[in-house]
Image 1: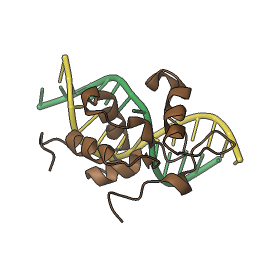
Image 2: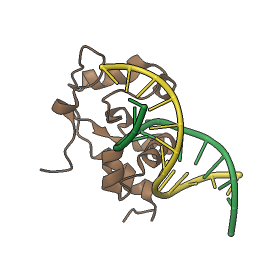
Image 3: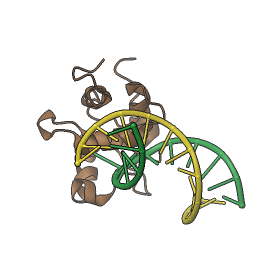
Image 4: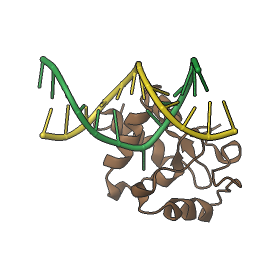
Length: 108
DNA sequence: CGCGCGGCCTAGC
DNA sequence: AGCTAGGCCGCGC
């Protein structure tokens, strides 16, 4: 399906479609890409994702609603700040309110 | 052709 | 409620 004929391309497409103020989980994206159990592959795709694509990788979080490790964005505040700037709300625990910002898909 | 890596997920204690 | 262990998937060398 992907232009490059690779699963990564599919992941990039999906992540790029995540609207501001919404977040998606790796597992969900993986399922959309056709790999329900390939959540880790999604994480790798993000890390290997070309920066010129401007993929909102900061909108991708784990099912726990916790942000990715610090070393990924170069600072936990970096990701949280961007998400908050886009309208994402955080819980007292520091996690994201998945129930409120969880992306349900391209269009529903 | 085969092995290892990774921003995970789920289940069990 | 929190932590540990195992498994899954695709890419790169």
